[in-house]
Length: 66
Image 1 (cartoon, rainbow, N blue to C red):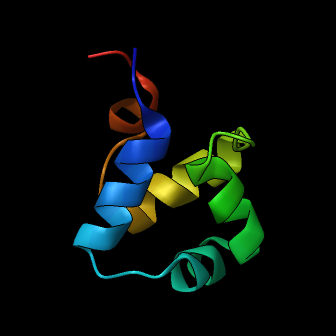
Image 2: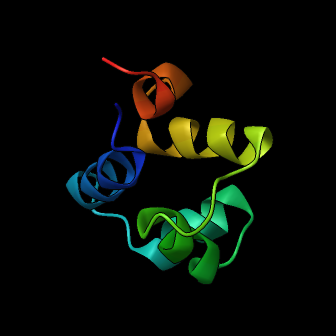
């Protein structure tokens, strides 16, 4: 099982991105990024690709079991 929320949070922090900056770069609100990181919202396919792009990972790394 992949822990998407922790991957997103840790990669965001490693890249020095705030939730606000990541959200702006992905075209969503900070609250949306926060909800994803707290496992309260599943991103759309488009948002998943945007997150992966901004976080310099693949969509598979974010969502596929290892």
